[in-house]
Length: 218
Image (tube, rainbow, N blue to C red; front, side):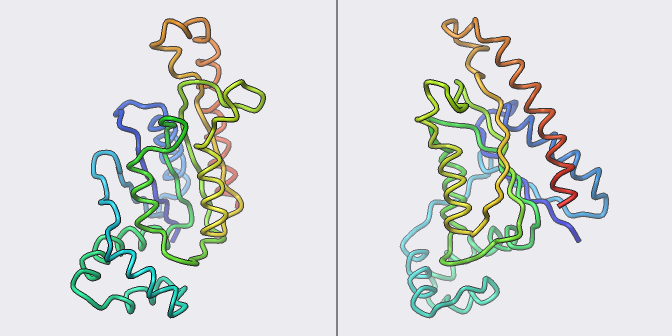
């Protein structure tokens, strides 16, 4: 059975990343009526930050060369580690069982929201491969960070996620779709870029629909 894991991390209930994520999820569910859809709103129901017991679990996994997620629970030994594992296990199970992971990730201060980073830290157990899982990131940025834009060098948002998914999970094919220049809607200094923002929004929505078809074909 196909499974889509959908993560939202925007603090805004009507955000542009949520708009794109909702569009992708609706299209995916229509294409997979028998598939399983799992949604986590990391902003409204945040996962805790990792603690020392989590780091001890990671040390054990490294020392004992445990790389199969099904075996991770065998590294749990103390009450503190059991408490940490109780947080990690459902998050990890959702991730491992999904063949498509949809990440709603607006840019906050050139990077990802703290809510998303907390989730990433919780599921980052050593040397776990998710090769073959499709990752789709739908984002929104207040300015423009496209190639050639003055602020492109400050894009630690897409770069971080791409490097993380590849470097840690072995996922080379991560698709990104962004709505750019969202601050043009509220910042008078960017008012002349409102049309460019609306064009970016329309293009992003169109790309998401095409992307669903591509993921389905894959």
